[in-house]
Length: 168
Image (cartoon, rainbow, N blue to C red; front, side, top):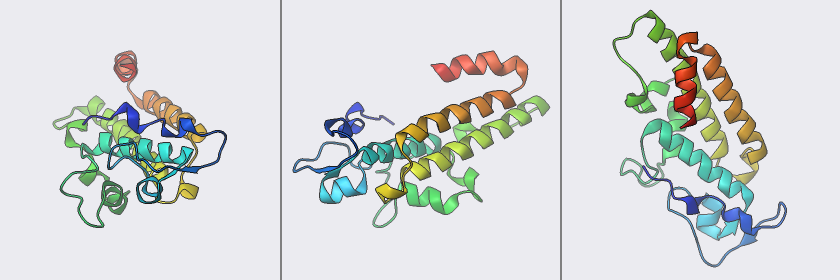
């Protein structure tokens, strides 16, 4: 799972909140917004789409180009169909733990809430229509809020260790 730095910041070429049509396409298939891939329309909301797909990829462990997603199927649609009822069916199992004691079970509850929030954010960022996506100025505070909520739910003995590992 490698995110390419070039998949983000395409919209830095724009001035203000407008969009442009580009004759050449820069970006990686699976991460570029549908409007950019089909019509060459570049906008700041295309970068939001790329971030949303990256968040979904991190949580599921599946690339947007995985053979599982063919035809009309996509990473986003696969997750959208499972969310929220079947969340654990799409989450990368290495993010979850088995054989837990009581303290670890409360930690898994915090992890599950965090994963659910990140998936919801990823789905909001990767909506098909740019008008349905949330702006990056909203994304960053939401990520910070998810982190704060996650950290507040951890047993106090693990907070510092978890905080350090989240920062790296």
